[in-house]
Length: 81
Image (spheres, rainbow, N blue to C red):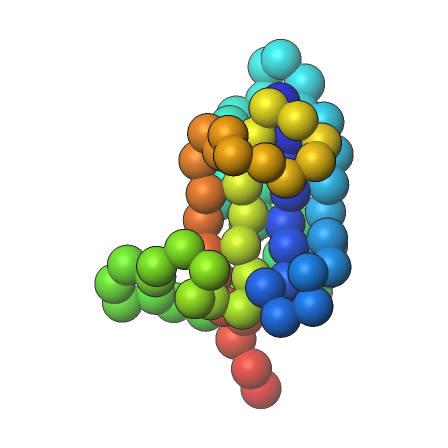
């Protein structure tokens, strides 16, 4: 399993790594850790954000390359100053 965090606008992978067998597959938890280490804050969401509509998304998937199989995803925005 892999976790990928991607910028929707540029397609740039901000994080792409293999998950250990004991790690959670919940993408939100990985985004929270990434945001803390990057010194940014995830914007509060007041409802569902459709896939691909946010500035960023995270997904857990079977392969390193993006494909048709995604186990779970999380779309999000970052807070601005």
